[in-house]
Length: 214
Ligand code: 5GP
Image (cartoon, rainbow, N blue to C red):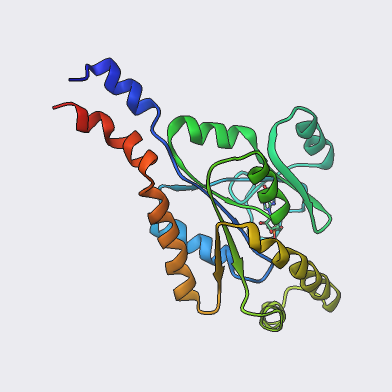
């Protein structure tokens, strides 16, 4: 039988899941991730640091931590990012602290980051489910970007060109969801979270103490 100290020690190594989600702009990643948080409110959406200007409706500390280039570069020098990348002329990064805190507390974490950042995490062998969300075709992607009505022709052309490169990266991700039908894609993403939560090591870390004591 385990004593209380042992039980607490085992509870302290409770594992969380890490979901790393990437997609070309316009593939529906933000919508799918929002839906995911609605279904799993205990999945914590990491708040990245960025140098891009705040868009209307965005809140500092909620959507991003908005910082200037000097502050971002200082964080790079201090090794404060677990990954960072330049995307569409701006810098984006995930604080090492966010990942460490999630690990220590066993909190489930969602990172919505670009392919360069995801590749850096994979290279560091950060354990998690790496999910790529793809549009059914580049024609459909262009249609969606035009429907959004937020970008100029030039920006849309650049996003499509970037998408080609990003889609080439899809092959190394653990999961690839083609967002043809939103409902189906949302269910697929939820399925990944449910499966990750059933990983043996994670379930053991959460229940072993209770199973070994009575
Ligand atoms: P947006 O400016 O539209 O919010 O994001 C542009 C791109 O930057 C998206 O692909 C988004 O996933 C990515 N991004 C957001 N935060 C991070 C981050 O912390 N690291 C990396 N590598 N990419 C990020």
